[in-house]
Length: 85
Image 1 (tube, rainbow, N blue to C red):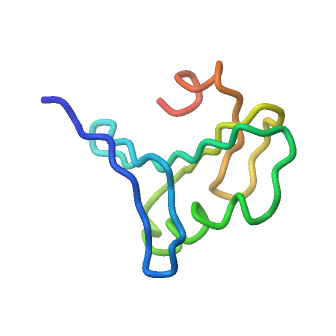
Image 2: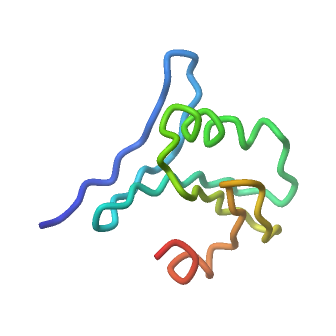
């Protein structure tokens, strides 16, 4: 069956843009349409992975940077499918 695309927000208004389900895996995905990321851009994903410690990876799609910071991987839009699945 078709899986739903969801978003997440905690009581402190921290949020993650998309929560994808792929088979039995939950994939949090944040989208930032900018080249210069700030540490606050990671806060939603950081809080999500603290709330759900079984999450193995999380992603920020951005315009400029490809790197990994703990569980969070920064990727470019055109690498989305090869990176998350």
